[in-house]
Length: 397
Image 1: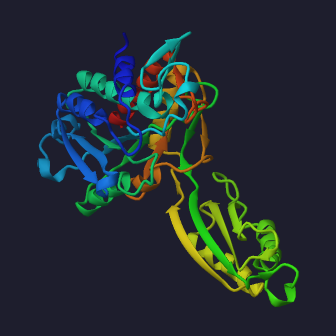
Image 2 (image 1 turned 90 degrees about the vertical axis):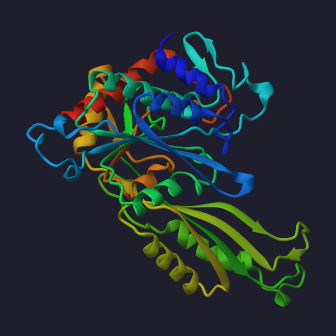
């Protein structure tokens, strides 16, 4: 059996529904410590929502590995660091009776591996670990430092996971140069798309105040739904920005509207609207807040508004990492990859604050979060080979 497949099955068999890690990281620690990684476990979160994080860094770097620097004092050399990042937690299974095979029993049918986390993203983690094992077997003292940042809080609130580890790394001055997040980014075939950025996410909860009353006596009430309607129309029609070469235009969407008591003869006293911006680097969270509040004030609404910034946008322009990943994909699969910033958020938004070059790349994403989540068995070793190729290319710089 492929070593990548074997490790992937070990991880899939662990029922690590967020925020549970269910022992996945214990498996990874054993593999990484055997290679010479120093492993730190960071547990965070309240008692009812404990999150397990892993920071592991390879300590086998030697100045002698750098041409011309063998005589340099070791303390003066800071090797470039490539971080492999991912999450061991998975989303809930949904109705078990709808699965063709048990979600935490790795199963094979017609060349496909089924199980919760098969695509998102336990196979990526397995491929990363095996790629590092093979790379270090040939390069025991590489011109590159290697690290892993693994969390069990990516599918949950994402408060006590990668964000916590990044803050600790930032506090102690850890320098990261490159990062690959193993999110499933491929669309039709392995390697056809990588994410070199993500849009920011800014959510708001708006409460428009009115006066409750009998629906037959509207002059004695003040309907907040009616008052908000013109402002809603203007918000929907507003162009927040035009995007740029890497990002689509910023979008504003309403996700929930709550008003009324359930009775058909009562004018509600309050309307609550949940909305979200997915914004490009052409806008900032502050500029979007200012513009939206100006529209609400223009329509003379009595309101309260609570904002939640879920993540800033980030972008990695073509450079050493994008080139290494693109070349490795093409060498392994023959595919010319597409750079994209579409889709939702990932933990890349936290890591990007301390790492200038970050991309996301992993298997085909068509089945993620679905019943009978799966991945092609034939894609696992090519995925491992691509990660290994990136290591080789960056180490050669």
